Image (cartoon, rainbow, N blue to C red; front, side):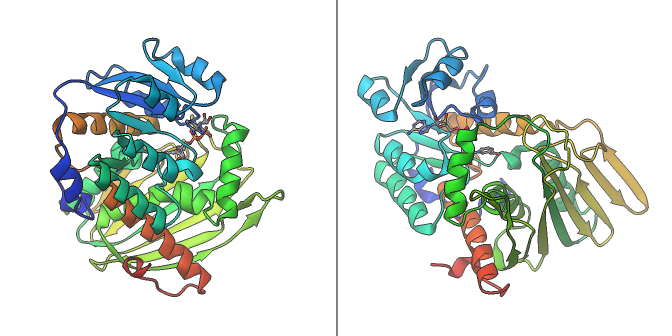
Length: 377
Ligand SMILES: NC(=O)c1ccc[n+]([C@@H]2O[C@H](COP(=O)([O-])OP(=O)(O)OC[C@H]3O[C@@H](n4cnc5c(N)ncnc54)[C@H](O)[C@@H]3O)[C@@H](O)[C@H]2O)c1
């Protein structure tokens, strides 16, 4: 394990956990849009038996039941618990406003939890989740599929190999567009609007969780964040949190910057969401750049490495964004069978991501001053 992969030690999970010597009995809680990708880690996986599907939407239940004909279906986790069906772990794919209550409930029922990001909206809720995990002796994981995206994993390996010399700094870019990609149901936008009203926007907080995660994963703890979060209003409460610039310095001294630009009418070819994304690390003898992730923006090799006057393109990486969900899910289920390796992320490590986001908000609100994420209360 790379020391940087576990930002905060998670002794609770390591001490209390006994790996399963049989397939894990799992329940999906929430069967909406992202189920389509989270399910990839469960399909054809001998580490797991899917025993239940839960969603109050009967159409969703009927649709997803076709994937798991032997699983029982329920309108709520309480009904599942009352059914007597034994569950070891819940795959929690709930709308963000329901994360804290849902996770506390499910840990309390004695289920391990694999939670979608963002973990929750504030530190108080995060602590409630950690306390619930500790109280029940169950494991809380906040999944981060980007850490399983092969081009990003290679990028990290290149930076650590010394191939581009000593890391001098790095840049992440995202262009958000509404034109292209898969359909997102209006019901998903409803809870996103609730998030916007709470000051937790789609670009900085929801999608941003991934970008901030990759920063922590690549270069470790962060000592200072400075940001300038803008707003673009589309009416009816649809206020998108761009243009935005966030800059930071890691404890190691390496600095990073992320710019978010909105181009609502830009057509972006994508099988999923329409995010045009890049990561570029500059070293003192070269650079390495991941050209795309969720969407199919730049149609070059997904990873390019320039060093000593030569450019190397990686043409054969598994650069389908969906594969990162498959591998993150498999990692979790294998972890439950072995207890080995970092959780990516443990509940405690995920709080570092939350702190990073909250520091960006605090900095922007104060006019862009430097904020230490560790000092937020
Ligand atoms: N990792 C990623 O890149 C990524 C991408 C998209 C969404 N997400 C996250 O996944 C989560 C779900 O997002 P989504 O886009 O699938 O949302 P969605 O709105 O499409 O689906 C949510 C589902 O939860 C169901 N639900 C509501 N209340 C419930 C309850 N009490 N019990 C069980 N089910 C309930 C809804 O009926 C719906 O089917 C969110 O946390 C979101 O941030 C992550």
